[in-house]
Amino acid sequence: MAATRSATLPMAADLYGDLEPSPKATWRDHVPGLIIVAAGTLSAGFISDHYGAPLTLMSLLIGLALNFLSADARLTPGLAFASRSLLRWGIVLVGLRVTFGQIVALGPVALLAVLVIVAVTIGCGVLVGRRLGFDAAFGTLAGGAVAICGASAAMALATTLGERRASQAQLTLVLVGISALSALAMVTYPFVAHWLHMSDLKAGFLLGASIHDVAQALGAGYSYSDAAGQIAAIVKLTRVALLAPVLAIVAMFLPRGEKSGKRQGLPWFVVGFFVLAGVNSTGVIPALVTGTAERVAAGLLAAAVTATAIRSPLSQLLEAGPRPMLVIAASTLCAFVLALGAAMFLIG
Image 1 (spheres, rainbow, N blue to C red):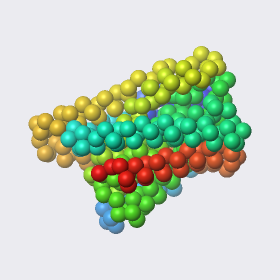
Image 2: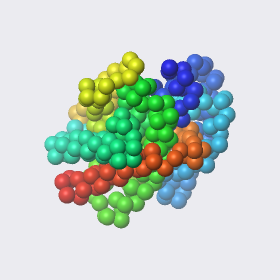
Image 3: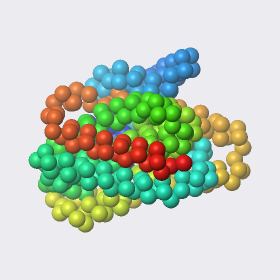
Image 4: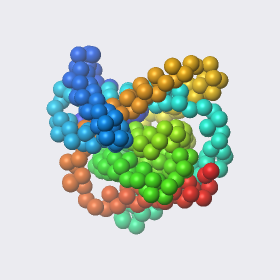
């Protein structure tokens, strides 16, 4: 079943390596795709440095402009490596930009707000899906992907539900919708935060608590400010860490089809993020090292955004009917409204 899925599913930010197996390729096979990613990211960096535009936004737009290159199979190993492995290591290095003081400063109210946002967003997906004629499994799939970590959460939920509950076609539609709406959120949500004159803390919480995929959430945060990016990273990775308990609840309350997929534990890159944040909190890391790590992390995240945009399945958006997209859009709107309300009235 894994081989069939990898051949037909649209590829996105595959944090867990579930959307496709790691390509069996030599380092030479990675070079063409990585050259394209490097060229796109450097171009984005040039525009950002000379015109003051956000780096990750420019990476997204250039990646989308190069989307036609995704049809070239020679680029697949390099693009897959950039959108998955570079993203993971970028997340880990972001930990050197964060301290436990910042995490504690968010407080228990922020953590409770994240839990409520995740739960209500999944519930919204189920309710809207039922209203539009879908079963609870599809609503859970769509709502859970929006609520937790985008495409990776969708795949984990689909393997937990099994093929009989979440079909190949439904999973494909969710991945396409998530890819499109996450990119749209990365572009538009920071403008909303600026329009509302949000503080870095409030903006970081809004962006981290509402944007689907990790790369776009962090990209939006750092496009607002470095401080907002750090808060967005903490909040977003808290959502990622909730995937394991959500999968356990889904497996408990929704009957499975065939045998379920592998269990997801706490991702190593989330552990690495918090470990480096803890080390950074001690003050033992020299400023030169943290400064270098910040620049490397920014470059890795920008490269991951570029690669993800190149691989986004834009052509499949035209093939999907409106009803599945409405479920994803409703869940997206729910997460945004809840995160905005929490940021405005509960945070800071």
